[in-house]
Length: 69
Image 1: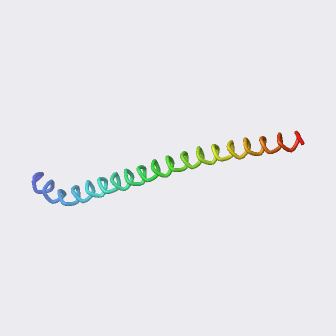
Image 2: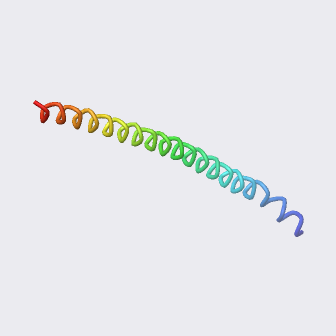
Image 3: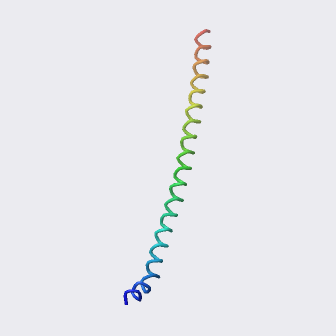
């Protein structure tokens, strides 16, 4: 009797397990996408900071030239 109940519940248990696996896969995909975008944002921030430093250096050089005149 218990075996029959267990066998009847198996498809439901398998479906729930499949759902959990699917949710985990979705989470992994979202997390990986987040990591990629986070890395991209970090790279972009570094590039912008470098560009800002270069512009400041150039501005300082121009200011120095003007002040020498």
